[in-house]
Amino acid sequence: MRVISTDNSRSSFKMTLKIASPISTWERGRPPIPLGTMLLSSDSDSDPPSTLIGWLTPLWLISIVIGAFLLPTIGSSEGNEMTPDRALFTAVNAATLTGFSGAGMESLLWPGRMVILLLTVFGAFYALVMGGHLLCRAIGLHYTDRQIMRTTLVIEAFLLFGVTPFFLPITDSVIPAAQLAIGAFANSGVSWGRLPDATSWATHVIILPLTVLGGLGIPVILELWNWLLRRNPLSAHTDISTKLTAAVYLLGVVGMLGLFFFEYGDVPPRAAMMASVSAVDARSLGLDIVPLSTWPTGVSWCVMGLMLIGACPGSAGGGLFVTTFATLWTGVRRSFTGAPAGRPFAIVCVWIAMYALAVGVTVLALVATAGQGAGDRLLFLAISALGTVGLSHDPISLVGPPLHILTIAMLFGRLAPLAMLWWLGRARRPFI
Image (cartoon, rainbow, N blue to C red; front, side, top):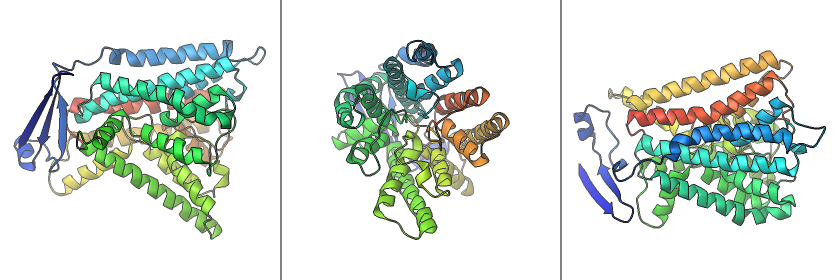
């Protein structure tokens, strides 16, 4: 085992780069780590965790309660106030970065839209900072809480002040333009007014790249930035995350175009552009750039598969995570060779089973309370809510118990992945 240590006195930070070998890990009684896997760890004495981390989840929940109170009071016109169930759904919809349309959001006054924008900004900060913190603990990346917070704030400020002007000609209003700018990176589909279509330059040059970056997470963005500046090599996690993100995108495009060709016998150039947008949009953004009604019926099942896969761990996206399947494959391969699969493999199996159970329970609850809906559409709605995607065939018009079920599903979709990362951090084993 070769150890290289560097000491940066400016930031009081120590980083150790270890090149692990299968022999050394076998001697410690742990599953072998692939040769060349990088384990980056920080010195806990010189890098104490930020005290804000412990307060982030309570503050985030409090922001939802405040938002649900403000929406019917200052956000709605007199005589057209939001009902409590819709106000709570709308606040959770924004704070979890889900982005369902409907439920009275279109009729909000500008103060109500400002509340939604603030919930999206803080929801993105919460998801990216808490997810980045837990991801670094889980896989041993060296980035500190302060680095993650500072990077998140810089990116959000750049989006609000630097990217918003590009959307002003499309939305004709500041708040919808800012919502579109921050929502693209935050993987949130909340929007008002006109959207750029599948052939627009703004879609392919601004929205889709921001969506991909937000779906990678702050630690991966920092590593890619340092790699571009030739400071650090890429960790195994960043390498596999970027490769799997590209692979899932290509599979989504090919799958949608294949279904389109099977239905119509031809694939026009516009269909290819629509498939490119939908392959990114379906994984977590949920912005209704390409309505589901424009695709053949079978594409809905392809979209459901993409929503289940989701984005990367520690990002603004949801779902099962693309790296989950890499961990699953690695554990199965090790088991067949007679090597221990490792605790991360067991945690991932539990995570997949728990997520499948959540989908089943949500669908059954929706069938019991909103039985008039088609079964496949209720399944689509359940997967979309649990994946914090926000895609739906029609604007949400549910009230009462079905709306509460979707609210709970969105909260699960935001908090359960963070709990899984926390569990992996306690395992203290490299998993990707």
